[in-house]
Length: 277
Picture 1 (cartoon, rainbow, N blue to C red):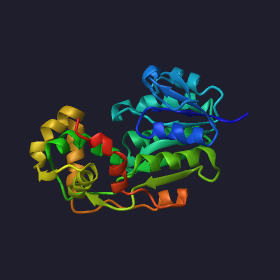
Picture 2 (picture 1 turned 180 degrees about the vertical axis):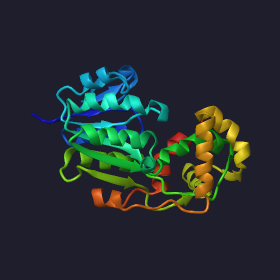
Picture 3 (picture 1 turned 135 degrees about the horizontal axis):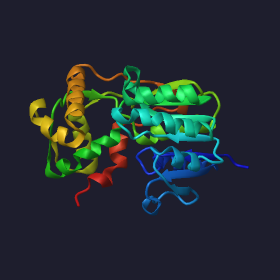
């Protein structure tokens, strides 16, 4: 029988593409989501209701599966809860591919989840993402107004296309040779935030420019969105890296046998998301 693979976070930025990629290769897919009626996933996926933070939901969804793509949506304060979920998952599947972050080496929620997976799962692969290009969608309204106002415009990020993350995840889920590997997934270049806005504007055919904002001016809105402590951590990290480009990894190319997609390609793929409403 064709193997069944569980995808958590199935309606998210990477999970949706993992579902499609697995189905395209002929695998059976069970997609875990909190609202199946609104999932809008490809035909052929077995969409089930559940919360990845609940061990019972994950155990039920993983029944009969051989591998799982795991996204843990919790914060540092919720990292302890991931252990029970991973133990429940490990009782069902022998392989887990976890969407992590380059900061996992420093601890935090990503490091805690990685440790729990190492302790429980026989075959694991960590996808350590530098930053997802899709987060640039947060600028959509400002792009429409013609000015993106934010701090650290010259900060250069090696952002990765969500489709590349999903493609690597599919390979790690179905192919041998990826167990015990921690891949750093980046785009092919470190591109400044100023240039990101320029590229998006060109691809979306908008007139939009960058306007530099001080960190102090940016903090209130950021704190309202993510909390004061996390906002301070983000701003400190941005300040520390403002003059140092993020490293560019070759892991996407090594796994997929092709170069990673560029930020311009990402902007082209998301042109409709920046179109005027």
